[in-house]
Image: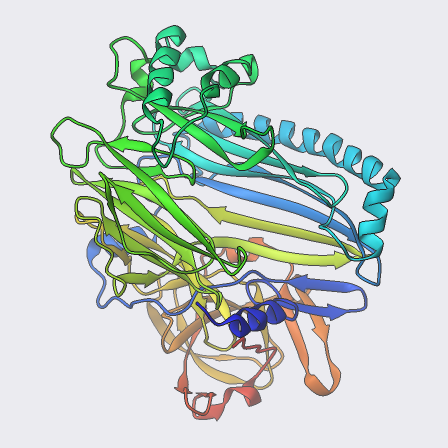
Length: 568
């Protein structure tokens, strides 16, 4: 999502050379690239009963959504990029029967998304291929790649409603990108796709309140144009609206000059502003909840419990020609300290009656920090941060016949009880791992244990027999064992310090890249192999961080394993 651009260049170069969560490799026209992981995290000690439970179960009670992102980029062998397309689907993380109707509704919605994308992509190919401007930009490596893309952002997901904001970007020639925002809302129990009238029972009163709020914003940092509401109402059935835990928001994506906005203007009418205005079913929330805070959003929150709402919004400062994006938060007229870095994602977290800001901020070395700010004081403690991001459970990039195919599966943050966090791991390779994080009553996050699930698709090959411990699906040691020479080993779990657990997989699930003098790299080609509840082999690692050497059973790891790749 500081200050040393050579580190950024290093990160981008690494992305060109390692697969899945690490970079890119190449073999006869087939390339695979990974996403980035995070740096070290704080380690917990002995696990409590609650932590052990969280390790083996989803956060309870609420529907948790995953965002599946798919993309394709077409180019020639000289890396002239003709066009790219992408779309996002919504998946339900829970597999039980509690949300069957919602799961079915999401499945039907995803079919519509794919069908719409195919039409949009065909239009992109047709227009960009026939445009002299687009062809000139492609040939001269100028402008940007012509594209059509869509992204989803979860606004709310609980027992009552699932509300999702979507951004579609279109650029046919490589010169200027336009943005269109839309939304989709589902009843969590029935799976029904909701209309505005299903939630807002009195639209006239709603827009009167919205208009008053727009007028009140005059002269403020987040002032709305005088014709904002008129433009919003002109959308008719195409009105973009979402429901968060405090009210209903409407969006508009054109500025006063008629140019489209990547980040739309957002205006919210709150549940307690008038009686009989909203369907009561969707105003009921959990006692603790999460509110996404968007860049152009102005949220009024009762921060001190006196019944009066105070404004909360973000301030961003572009640095070095948009290269950096410093951020701060304003709450009730007081501004926090500045958080430096690249991009960032912010959430307001209500926990035990108080409000906090969670800011996931990308650094220029590929690390993501999580900052916590108490909105009652708005004090930023720069030392109070954690090395964690929302987990990217899957990420790969494979190129065949000059078409890059990209896929990712991203966690969302909609539950005040916790989230699934991802970070980096440097045991037997640079990997990415994930673990559930629990949020305590004072909004402090903590990993639920110290057994991290590996999410990157690194595979190693055993060069000789290796002594190891055999452990069960919960990490309990069963007996001593031996990994046979020639085995292909999928990394499964780690404590992020001294151990790595792995399982033997069939060679058919492995893609081999490279060879010769520099050895081979191996990658998993079927992510279902992670869905495994059998025994694993655990090995103990001895690392000398100064000399960057790793030993297993007193033997240099390079003599035991083929396929290790480190970044950094």
